Image (cartoon, rainbow, N blue to C red; front, side, top):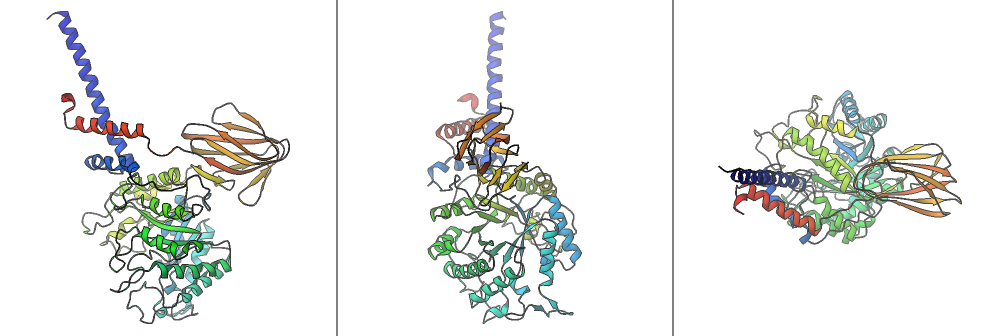
Length: 559
């Protein structure tokens, strides 16, 4: 064979090799990207789900108002649900709280069941169900004590009315609302007075838009207007006890049904809209939702109102913004994935492995902080149960610790993630943000501001793009700003309000601000991040999708 023939073979071979590598890259690129936008583990499910994601811009745009400052979002967002009231032994309660704190959680969402506190009749707070008789408050006093001892904040869930609060007892179900909503308001006030100055967050009821949480009889329709009435009564009582209390409405269960009668429920978006029309907007400081991933992971960004995934909170946020509540946060009451084994038949909560559950919970916290600046707290569902008698129920397998205190993979993964140094993420923050490191002479002012003197410093690590700092300065104020390894910037500030913009690429950054002259107040820190998918990205997505499918089907060389 002539040399020219060998050269041709070589050139063709190189083209084939390059084409093969390109097809392999395209195939793997689309699969990796598809997980980031569909949350699907199965390759075929990723390919089916990717076009759904690419149609997001074709749907009505949701109003999320990421540029609006949101209250109560400067604290760590890491919470977990506990069932401490079910632990009979005080030692086990303390061991639970100690493990919660060691894992790096900062909040516990804990039910204070009305039926377990005001047990036998109105105003009766003695527990006479067993000998010896004792105060019904005793157990809950211990829970509040433990939270304080281990540096945890409580989100107290006020639910579960006693049978005496209804004329027909439990004929309509154990969770049906009381005949007189003032009885519930009295109970809420009693709890708030007992723990005034110690507990500041109260959730009013749980999942009022579904059965059995609003009754389970055939005629027990969920009622947004009745719930709003109960919410507003409790709100007024709690605020009268302590205006600092954060009243949380909810938590709305993600529901597709429009049939308000059991065993169904009312669509959470519709329920919330009716709440607003009934005047609920004046009766809560924050709204609570459920954050179950069910059949897809935390990176599922497909917006499909007829499918329940972790994105459900976006539709709730949209309703809030449209009603003028962009400044109010969302608390994710329950967030989790279910590691139910094959031997348990009920798979209604989805099914993942324990390792997937561990990875998903970490990814969920990271996504929430990067993309949802309006979420104040997300609570893992749940820490542990008091015993293993529910092993035959799928509900049991949301836990991250076994009843005997054996940690599951999710506990260990969260412990490694939550104990990292504090970081700031996109959003509008105040000088009270938990990631800020203060040095020198700083004076804390009201409304999340701090005023410093020459030599005072503040530093932090953040994820995002451009950074904007704002505050006020006395005459002759000057600051030095160091961003990453860039050359420090010396900035002379005009008297009065000032603002500084520091452009940078999206990623991890460190910043240090030093006051060099005058007295300077830091009021707002805005971390920006570009969002959305533009036409070029959509086109690239479709191209990768087509090439990837073709490559996987072995047809790339026939195109």
